[in-house]
Image: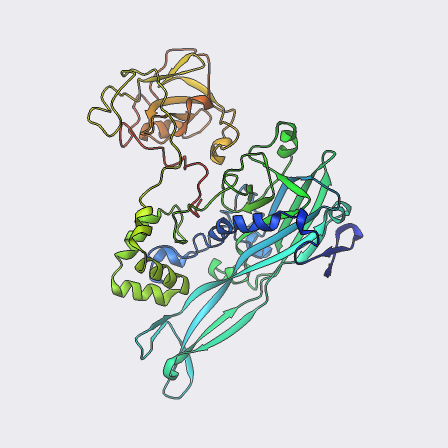
Length: 523
């Protein structure tokens, strides 16, 4: 037990380890359940295909959840808080609601991030001295490259809820400096790995909002100072928290969904202020209730209860990755390219080993998966009500996205119709929830291969709505997520009279509406 400073003169005890009363503590198992997603968040963008140092995109790394020293971040002025961690900041703040289920409740916090580590290759010269070099090939044929790696860190803290109600409790969450030296074979040289100190602090406080519900605030700050506030970002990253995120759990508590809260707590949820992070419930995908045992507060926007696809054999570190195509492209790297990737980073070498040894049946599973089958329902369109299945000849005959209509609350809705956006609550895409209540104009009606229907819309108060309509970039909603508005004049196609230009008259589910309930380790 380590004594830590508490706000308002309160002494708080940050306790490491599990609660004594394990029978009432479900967060341990829930933490384990969400760990795969948390690790995917931690390493998102760590090293991108083709995993080589020579690749330009691997010279600009760590784009999510980067907490840098405040003086470096604010060298040109204060930062503007955002809802996720795509912008550099010096802090993250999570606010969420927690319901107490029994007396003696305990709150657990895990702060996780990467610490940059510089890998320097040094070669022994004729005079016996080691000198820094960019690359070195040893007698056994192995190449070694100078590059930046990262070391994972996790700080586990817990406090009784009663302590958090009396005032802010805080604890150090940084990482010490370090250096290790690895000799290379036959005395050719050495690899020196050096880390600079990362200074950070996490503060937690709670306040009552109803009889048994409390608002919990967790704030992690980079408390270090940049040696040079005008240094380039690559140098500043050496004292940063990279991929920073927080796991929240506890004993005798459950957390309320901020995406789809119970009706009685919606006003309290609106009062939660999250900055540079996006908290979602963790847990099993089959759990559909508005509460859960653990929260993942991530710098990447996720749905409640995100999951890594069970077909994925391992993390590929690539944003918007598609496991099959990335695996195929990795297989096609030349021997020289693979050798460079292996020399670049140990995690890149692990990816190559996994791809090279992947069993045929594992690779086959990457081709696709059906999560559910729902019966197709008749839709009122300009085409015949019954038509061949999508894979049969003539299935697209009679379809016209710009003139077809679908019945919504008894009103025919199609190209030119005006609607109000009402994303369904539980299970809705987070990006769609931001548009709830906004008015929009329908551009087209699209039929998916599974028999469902989506309507393409442009949002009325989007300054680029006309441009989006011109080149065919839309938001997509199901008919039951739209409320028809009274038409004041005749409908007309969007975007200066130009019809949308989909790649296919019968597209798959649009790319900006990811499959619900599935997460492949990417935003």
